[in-house]
Image (cartoon, rainbow, N blue to C red; front, side, top):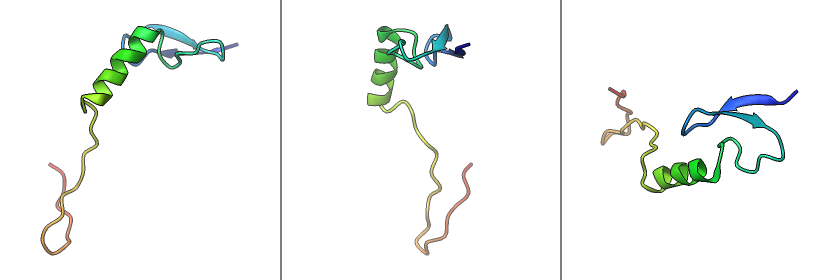
Length: 60
């Protein structure tokens, strides 16, 4: 039995099988939308800032 996942862009259910070349996306369109968001730097990872003395400030 294939694993079912949700497309990260549109939340449509997708089978996680080898024949699905767009996995984890449901289609080429959703894959391109995600790539565009990545290229536009919409995905970020919070980073702790360092002071002059090398100490890390806590994230807000």
